[in-house]
Amino acid sequence: MLLTLRHKELALPYLAYLLYRHFNLHTACSLPRYVAAMTQFQRMYRTDVPTYHTDVHAVDVLQMTSVMLASLRQSSRGRYLCPSSLTAVMLLAAAAHDVEHCGVGSDLISNLRHPLYHVFGPESTLERYHAMLGQFTLRYYGVFTEVFDEQEQQKAEAKHTLFSTLIMSTDPK
Figure 1 (cartoon, rainbow, N blue to C red):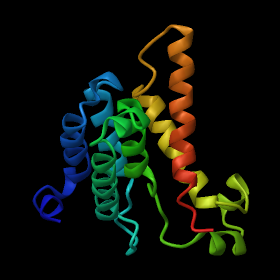
Figure 2 (figure 1 turned 90 degrees about the vertical axis):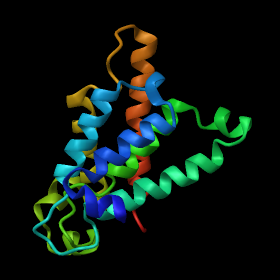
Figure 3 (figure 1 turned 30 degrees about the horizontal axis):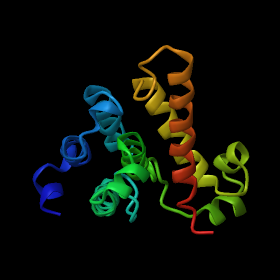
């Protein structure tokens, strides 16, 4: 919470920068692209809706995710199961999991036939929305797509798929 109070507007990218260094993620993605995406995620958390799903919540989730990853990666088996590339995807998904949250649940959005319902359907409506916005941001900043050979491109696509899967898994249903 101290980090959020001192650096409110930059709490998410600042913590992300510290975690990039802590987990040595330079082999997974470039620092400028990673921080640019995290900065955009910070901007995408709404301030006009009094809700739990704010940038403060994103910082809390990012920090808790990092604690769990640090614990996992203490052993050689943990580092094997969760290499830098997977760690980077997990941190990005933690930061983006509630971007542009409107303050109500997917059930209400479905019942009201909100425009998001018509775009994303009745199941995991908000999670699909968050994942789509996160994907757009990652692709816009080229977080995982800075290489051009086919094998690396397939790995980048796998990272994008995992990113969306992680966000979709936050659906309480």
